[in-house]
Image 1: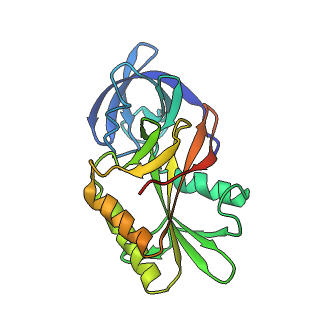
Image 2: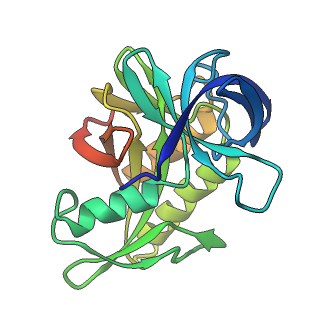
Length: 227
């Protein structure tokens, strides 16, 4: 997935879930945070960030956080990107062979999934999750309790149990340094349990790490899921 032209800056402070301040060329700017996760391990004062310029768009924020540099690793922060990253990889035949995208945001229970794929004789509902926390080479999700995520797991499980179709949850790790994925039980035991139950009932679970540069984010390879 191609990224827009990015402006370098330094992270200063998070004001709330979706608002932060950054420094660009010695000046302080209000900045949109496209991710409701805590990201406390990443968004440290003074850390290098890369931003999308929003100054010509309506609104009070001047920039939008896209990437952060963690030591020598670029990390994608935008939780809206995984459906597009995965869809692009499926279209190119890099992952999930035999499937092709046929729609976005299909109905799922009382809500919606991210992607609808078509296989041989069956449709596949896919929910993607954005992962940017890695500890000891293990990617972890979520980094904060997610009631919405737990509802998604239960809805996918129900879809499979009622035999209305095939369901996947795919964790898109927006960094290159993960060797495995695991639910972060310590941060959200309810989500971890819902994920395990969904898997036991037939929901397929996969995780892919990404190659992240200043120009694009593309899936690198699948990593083991530790449940």
